[in-house]
Image (tube, rainbow, N blue to C red; front, side):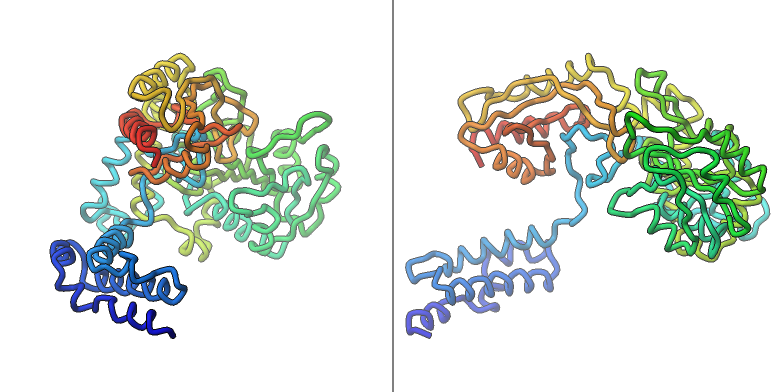
Length: 472
């Protein structure tokens, strides 16, 4: 170690001195002492490493006490900031898995506050005055909305498929078409979920074509169920064929084998009535005779993350009694959010208007054009700053594995690089409070107003204005 480095090390202020400095004393009541000490130790450690590497010299202000205190305060702000934070979704992907999928309706949020601020009858039967079941809070309305005989809920749809197969087909065979062996979010694959359940997967047909006789030819004394997986996150185009539900149901009845469908992002509303491609609703699938249907609560349904299981009472009761159910059950907040979301579906028009997922999907191009115009007018500098700003037409995506080929016409705010690159603009927008998540295409930054909430427009405009003015 050179004498110069030794001198620099001696110039680093001691922890006690920093704790007594005005800059730290001013914020001492705002942070726990343990967090303040952590921030001090981290900054001092980084300073020592800088000296060791030769990055800090005697003339540098890096070891100046005021500079160190300033860095400590910034570090405290960073350390105390929640990891899970609100962001503004300007990508145009409505069900953005990385950004939390569905936004809950306002009345659902109010219900959550009400339930979480006190005790509740989660597992208490108020009429009988004894222990009850948490599933009763949503089973009744799920039966009402879908015409199913019984219903229950677990923590997500992968769990719903897992517990269904583990209950009905453990150590036995389940027949599934090769064309339906999908991979869902996070690299979870149907074959892997089935393996984890203890069921033996029997593949039939080919990737693009599966016939009824393929299913029937695979039935043995070891067959426990037929599984149909709705291809909600991809589509096969061209020369393909799959067996209708009604035919699978008839085959299941013939051999006394339950037919299960993993519907994925199940919907209660026929979106074809609103100009989009037809997708089977949960009600339609139940009416076609499926014995068990599983689907997500936080995709097209627009509620909290949950895996919903509906179907024949005898089978649902077996699943409910599975000991695995305790590990997969949902908590009171999810139940409250799901129940209130389902209540909204009693009025389809109200669901379209008040459930954010449906509202964003069904919003017209004209209303989006008007919304984009409002945001554009809030942006003060259109040219001559760090980037140029204009408006263009574009398309949005539903996301979440739902309707993958559907493109929704939308209006975009485009930031064209000038003094800043598209990457730098994108990164700077992520540094805003709250962070703004955009998409970058053809060296331009695009903000899709479909997924920007009305209350967020001023925040987005302010961040763009500041960035275009300062370039940082």
